[in-house]
Image 1 (tube, one colour):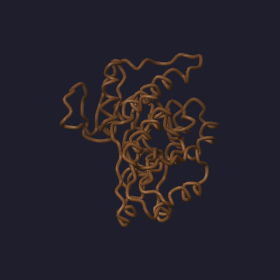
Image 2 (tube, rainbow, N blue to C red; image 1 turned 60 degrees about the horizontal axis):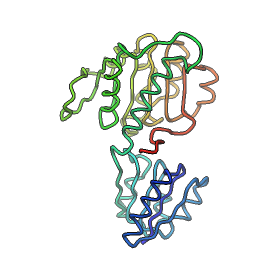
Image 3 (cartoon, helix red, strand yellow; image 1 turned 180 degrees about the vertical axis):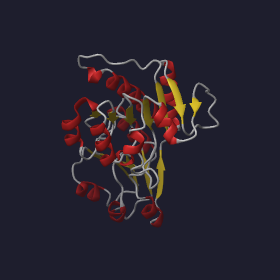
Image 4 (cartoon, rainbow, N blue to C red; image 1 turned 90 degrees about the vertical axis):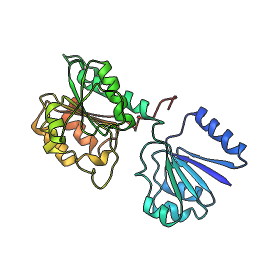
Length: 276
């Protein structure tokens, strides 16, 4: 049996070592495809593998067609929208993910982005403190709950749209509608997957409901942001800010137009810690 680790952004060396030890102890062979630059490389690598471990790498219908022996895909992360589930199901391929594995790393990044944006991108000038500000959280799974707890520790007031009834921590308030959340919060942290229902859901109308100086933090997926609406909102309100771990398609143009109003990490950084 052959297991492929296909990672455009490689795991830490210690993680690869651990994966190798487990796979080889089970009598299987580990194949590595790291830092690949062309989809053709992935299509070649999957030709004779039985299982594949990925990060944000895409396993679409073309990849599944090329992987004739494939039995399982494991995504190291919370979501699985980078995998064609319908096609995998049709081919009898099991798909699994690892919710919670990267949650703390992503939550810390969200907090770091709030500080970065509130302090003028760490350039001279008067910024603001997070303490006393209201943070709205959309998506209250593992990541959302960790963001809430860290924000409370900084003295923020936390508002949640979709609380988890099983969560014991009671330091936050709940709101009935997404409009109410945006209109009340200085910061909004987005922690939801890209689905047909969520794609493009955040745009001009929601962003312009935010109070003066409002800042949207996106550590989830770029597809949930309507870029046309974002562009219009930033143009009309110079006080609004947007920080994201997934650069918009038109990021270079937006950055040139809006400067410190917008920030995107050079490459998705949410899980880029040794611990994760």
